[in-house]
Amino acid sequence: MKALKIFCISLLSLLLFLSLSVFGLALTLNSTILNSDFIISEIDELDVASLAEEFLSEEVPEEDLSEELRIALNDIIIKSEPAVKEQIYATIYPIFDYLLGKSQNLDLLLTLENTILDPDFVISLVDELDISPLAEEFITEQVTERIPEEIEYLIEYVDDVIPKVEPWIKEQVRVAIYPVLDYLLGESQSLNVVISLEPVLESLEEIFNEAFLESPPPDLTHLTPTEIEQYFKEYFAELAEKMSSTFEIDEDLLGTEIPTQIAEVLAEVEETLEEARQYVGYFQLGYKLVIGFILLLILGIILMNRQVKGATRKIGIIFLCYGVLWYVGTFIFKNFARAQITQLDMPVQFQTLLPPLLSDVLAPLGMFCIGLLIAGVVLIVVSFVYKPRQRF
Image 1 (spheres, helix red, strand yellow):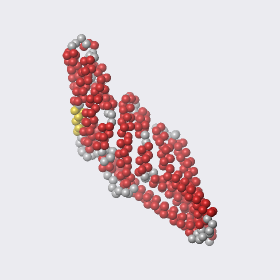
Image 2 (tube, rainbow, N blue to C red):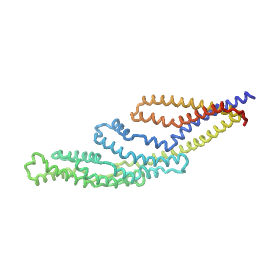
Image 3 (spheres, rainbow, N blue to C red):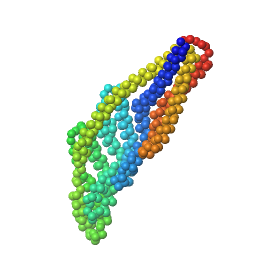
Image 4 (cartoon, rainbow, N blue to C red):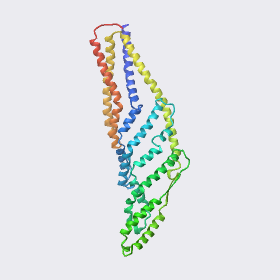
C-alpha cells in the first residue's frame, strides 16, 4: 500500500512538473504574442527612421536617389513616425479583439479606412511634412529634360520656385488623396484626377525672368532690358511648350491591377485571421484547462500526503526544481540565441533589436520561474518549521 502511495505521489509530481512546464510556455505566449499591449510596446521601441535609413543606403543605389532626397525622406519618416504608430496601434486593437474572441466580426478594410488609411489622417501628415525637397527634385528633373540650351544655367534657381508653389502643391495633394484612396481601396472603379501645372509654370517664369534679366547670357548683354526680356519669353515659351500643362493621376499611373491586389490581400488576411481565431480559441481553452489540471494535481498531492509537512515539502520541491531548471534553461537559451543572431545575415539594426525583443518575450517565463522558485523555498521552509502533525 505504501509503495502504491509513493508511486501515485511520484506520478502526480511528474505530471505537475510537466503541467507547469506547459503552463509556463502558454503563459509566455499569452503575455506576449497574444497580448496587444505587448505588441504595441515592442513596435513603440522600433527606431523606424534608422531602419529606413539603413534600408535606403543598402538597397537603393546612390545614382537612383540623391543624398538630399535621402535626407528629406528620412526627415519625413522621423516627423511622421509618432502619428503613423498611433494609427497602427488603433489598427492592432480591433484585430486582437477579434482574435481573442472579444468581438465577433472584423472588417479589415473598414478598420484600415478608419485608421492608417483615413484620408483626413493622410492629409494631416501631408500638412506636417516638408515636401520641398521632393518637389524640387521633381521640378528640376522636368525642367532639365526640356529647357533650351541658352537658359540651362537658370536651373539652379528652381529652389527659389519651391516656396512659392509648396502651399499650392499641398493643396493639390489634399484634393487628390480622397479619390486616390477610394480607387485603391475599391470604393470607386475609376480614377481621373487632373492637376493643372499652370501655377508651377507661372512661378518658374517669374523667377527665371528675374534671374535672366539680372544675369543674361554674354551675347545678349549689349541689348536693352526690353530686348533681353523678349529673348527670355521666346526661350521660356519653348520650355513651356515641351512641359506638360497638366499632371494626370489615373488608373494607368497607379496600375489597374492594384485595387484588385489590395482586395485579394485583405481577403487572404481576413481568412488567415479567421483561421487563427479558431486556434487561439483552442489555445485559450487549453490554457484554462491546464490551470485547472495543475490545481487538481496539487490537490491530489495534498490529499495523498494528508500531512502539512509532507505536502508542502513535495510541492515545494517541485516548484523549486521547476523554477531553477527552467530559469537556468531560459538563461542558456537567451545567450545561445544572441550568439546565433550575430551570425545572421541581416541589417545591423535588426541584430540590435532582436536580443532585447527575445528578452522581452521570455520575461514572463522568467518571472514565473522566479515566482515558483520563491514559492518552492517558502513551502520547503514551512515543511521544516511546521511542528504539529495535523491530519487533513
